[in-house]
Image 1: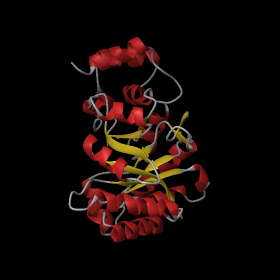
Image 2 (image 1 turned 90 degrees about the horizontal axis):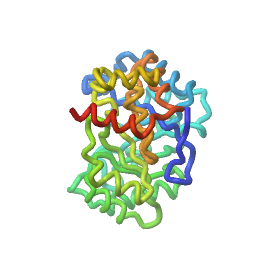
Image 3 (image 1 turned 90 degrees about the vertical axis):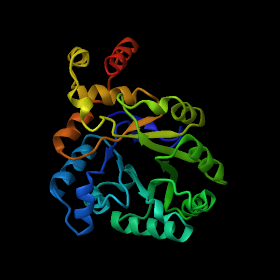
Length: 276
């Protein structure tokens, strides 16, 4: 597994991460105390950790924070880059601080590496939200501040609201099949040194089963189609894909996306094949 510097000069973060959003049914069941497929998912996360992945993304609404805590128990916490999110109805100062403290309890840790606003909420001043985020950084409970599912305008607004600490990361849906953010958000993040965590990097599995020209390219490199799609993302200096860690098999396959690269011509062929 290869690594990227988070935020340019921050800690080393694996260029492939692990996401722990499973599905809406999982969230509902988790709220009732049933972590469906718990052992399978814990084994998947552990397989990633053993393979060198240190980036794990979760959220208070996912219901997977206790599962992540169980999976990382026994590992050196300082070597794990743990990201979680606060839900959009918890963005007032008091609510946000309470949400972070509850996440810390569920994750069984004293701090999170990246705390992200999950969705914007126009009913709450972004200055209030970012001010609370900065308080948490000052208290040592959060290392980096991020946002998720924000438009470019909202990203700029959030960044401008920060007074002492920078905006370190943006999380958005991004893949070979969904490239709309390349028009504005990707260039802005590159210019500002903001990392982009790419969720749905395999387009809900569609890219893992692509055929035709993509399959030929995969054979050329001795890789699976999922590995090709993830490798295309990690070729971008500030992008960190976070495919879902659901099974050991899938996580092990995702590990194979790191440590090699395509030629520029083949990346162009891959892009063209998936735009047809």
